[in-house]
Image (cartoon, rainbow, N blue to C red):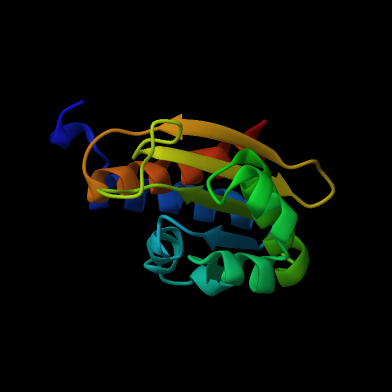
Length: 169
């Protein structure tokens, strides 16, 4: 994958605009819990004027302590599966949906690099989870390429695409 194939700001704005339209059509509020993206999902969404009509809040929970305190992720989950895992992503999305009383939530946790990767979880490993109120949460594993910026851009794009998918199926 070449650097030019990573989502540029304009592409992320298009995705955010599509999410805004879908959220308004469904009369739902969106919340996000972010780790490796560092608040970029919330930034992409709130760059849009009028986002307070459909965007509830975002939580940036970089440390394990923040994941536990702010989102209700269980210590046992973090010790057993690690911060970058399906189990943690699912607990993050359930926690942000419940605690912020949103109708839709997305959560991301991963390794953006350039350090922090292991043989089991290399740089670019990202778990994204989505949940709609009244439905089960689902999570998906991604392996993104490129540098830190590229991994984070791809994470934001995949998170937003997942929200769109959830609202259109």
